[in-house]
Image 1 (cartoon, rainbow, N blue to C red):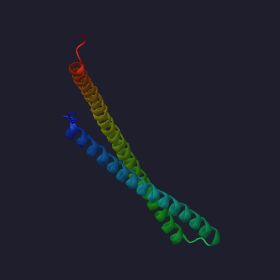
Image 2: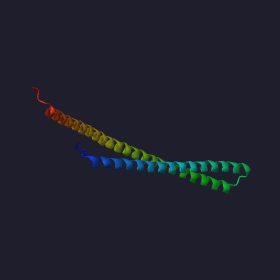
Image 3: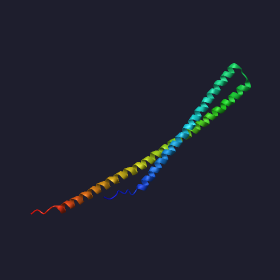
Image 4: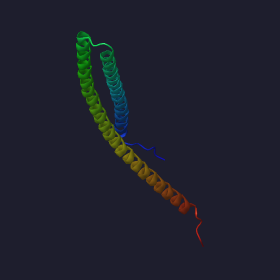
Length: 147
């Protein structure tokens, strides 16, 4: 019986490597996005604490200098939050791009896997046909002549 040899095995292996790379890149992008999201949440929490602290301070004693500093700090936090929101959105875009790359890589690999399976099945059928012909040939040579 002849050994099955898939002529496109190297291509299939390359597609498998590319799929694994795409998975890794997607995971890295998702981690980066999650870090950006956590940073955004931290800034938002700090902004809320700052506003709460400013409100408490105004209720206790009103100092113009302190109020002005607190207001500037709040503005800076708001600006930071907006910048972080933009960064997080960019990270989300990268995650979506990586997800699309992975989908394409999986499709290419699946096509090669399907072709491999089809060729393997054809090979097995051809081998079975050849074996059956050999068995039939042997059987016909062994039959004693009927007189």
